[in-house]
Image 1: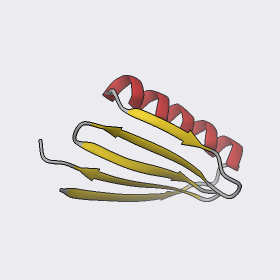
Image 2: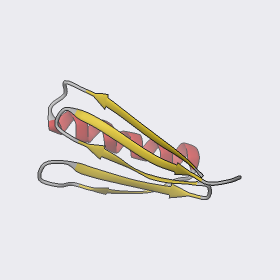
Image 3: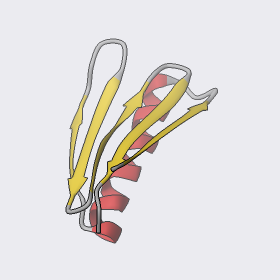
Image 4: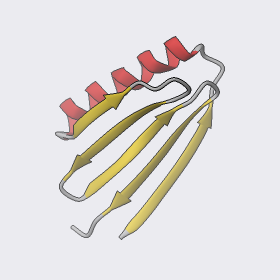
Amino acid sequence: MADIHIERSHHFSMAKARKIAFQWAEQVENDFDMACTYEEGEDEDLVTFARSGVKGTLRVCARRFELDAQLGFL
């Protein structure tokens, strides 16, 4: 299995970051047939995504996006 970790800082408000993350979740659901859940938290949000061969999370924080994914064997 391969692990991927990506962090990107941003200068958006938390509301704008949430909107971007929600749009990303909708796009991967449609384009890649992912199953996504979106959980809003007090300090950060968590998008969980999965499909055959990949699973992971996208953390939405006040100043960064943090993506962790595990790729399975094809």
